Image (cartoon, rainbow, N blue to C red):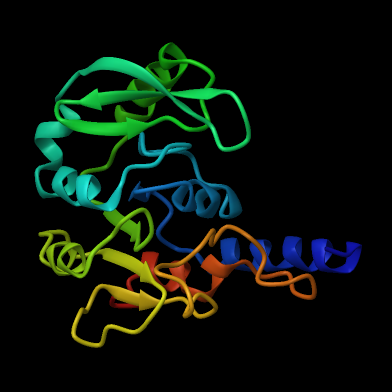
Length: 208
């Protein structure tokens, strides 16, 4: 990516911050997309769902009973191989595996989880998921039935019958969206998740 596009990216994220009016968002995200969006907007992490991922089926189950899981303790810590080498910690939150992919230890992950959980605004919750990591059509339907008004699941194809589904082009020949925190190509300052107007969503001007 060229220097010009890096500068344009800075201007773009500054413009996004200027557009944003709802600044006390608690973003419950199934993967790193949420954290990247919050960093772009220069917002504090008022949610523990940062630098981790949860498989969609488990994530939807967690969101169906969020209050219960936020009151649960971690147990049964184990490790899984990191795709870039080494391992990362995984722990069960009740019966939900939480993959702390960007933490060096379970202790660090748990400390950050508790600190950020204490900042949650239960009156301003937004739920964000993607259709990768084994998401099925039945999962999409379950996600759409979550009680939360503000919810969006980013998908590799259009689902007009699912209100919360938002189409991210560029992954039509795959089973799901890919790594949407990547730039769309070498000639643009936009990343795939920028195709979703998350600022409009946070401001209440976009229904998914």
